[in-house]
Image (cartoon, rainbow over all chains, first blue to last red; front, side):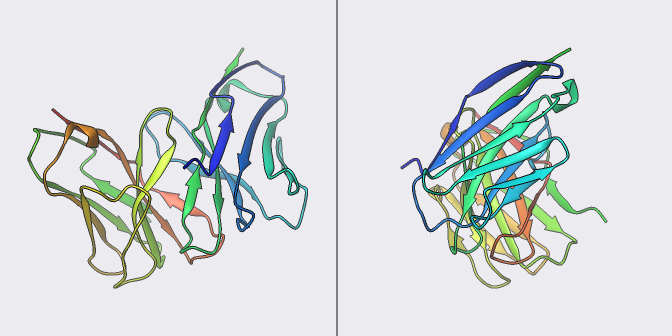
Amino acid sequence: QQQVKQSPQSLIVQKGGISIINCAYENTAFDYFPWYQQFPGKGPALLIAIRPDVSEKKEGRFTISFNKSAKQFSLHIMDSQPGDSATYFCAVSGNQGGKLIFGQGTELSVKP
Amino acid sequence: NAGVTQTPKFQVLKTGQSMTLQCAQDMNHNSMYWYRQDPGMGLRLIYYSASEGTTDKGEVPNGYNVSRLNKREFSLRLESAAPSQTSVYFCATQLGLQGYEQYFGPGTRLTVT
């Protein structure tokens, strides 16, 4: 069963634009919502994460917006740069051995 | 500090052959994980070890076995490789069990012909 649905599958944005990636989850027991960034040939790396007690978290150009009632959260990349071109994964986690359940991934390409 | 290391980086196997993927960490983390990454499917958990001496199945454990050799090392074994196991395999570590960052290794690209 797909516990996390991520969209879009791919995204092309002009330099300086805003990139938005969305995730929806099913289980209300999840309480940790990270986003990972992966460059080609590398392992994923944590970008930013949020817990359900806040609706938004910002770190530099990256913002997570969290809607608990809708069971959705999104990643916003402001002033997108070519160096942001990568695959982004949302994930969810609950009280189950620290396991992460990942979304399908979004391949972001930022054009100069 | 090397962080999380994986060996080998690449491997080609014939159907039915066996092999072990190695993962080691120098971060003194308690929990370790094995994922596989396939196009359009994200990363799926194969097995994990919440602490030294324990292992548990993840989402896709069939065809795999694991060993938590000590706190540093967590290996993944394919006893009889199948083409469906062609994938990129990632090892990850985490300090504890609840809401901590997972650190990933560089991956092993495995092809089964």
